[in-house]
Length: 318
Image (spheres, rainbow, N blue to C red):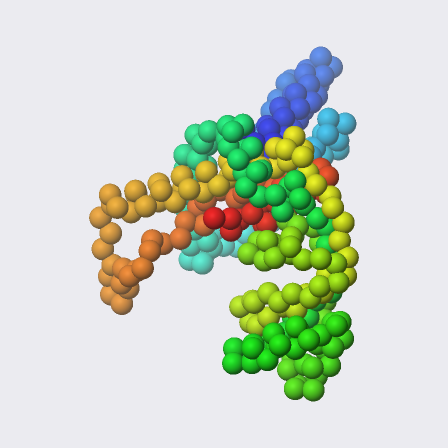
């Protein structure tokens, strides 16, 4: 089970214990034990509803549960008041509202099935983790942190050759700026400090080969990125430190592949007939991103490498 799910389950368990304990205390004081947390006009809000909210609260600590539970209850009370007013106005019968409710129901069911299905994915074996680590030295064993100055250049394809020649002849980024301004070629300056996993993956091997003071070109969808490597420092990540992030990435990749395969199987075995002006796609299958569980992410970092940035960095690896 991935870390996020563990935290959510742990939070839910803690919240249940604390809140049910509170119910028990009420009983010992002569009050009837109840799962009702509050009554709003004629409607009741339960402890289970509060627990459901707390289970979606990330990084909830045991000493925060009581306050978080109270805050969750207040939000549920506000929500219930609005729901009651909506029903008074018969908004639950409004066609647009009914369509939105049905769309949400379908979305929840679709995601629930895919999450259950992909939950059968096996965690990667140590050998797979080691192989991934070895195959990507620029991300791990030879990982660097780069101080970059960038020019995001919008340029026509027929002028790329001239730009490359100008970059080769340039001794600094200012030379390129002057060249662009003389020809009225639009560009935007930028830059910053970025670790290897925060760079475009397709360009990472070139970055890894660059030396401080060099200028490189990276082609983008809208033009070219001219990058000056002002400086860099080595910040390798050993296999032990990288393992949790690699494991999570490989597991999520396996789940994504399982989801795509299952979606293809369901389509191949179903009877699908397109009507009216709608036609079957001529290339590939429909995307499954809407039902594939979101990749696990974390803001926690170890050695400067977070699971979220690692997944962005390695998402295009072949």
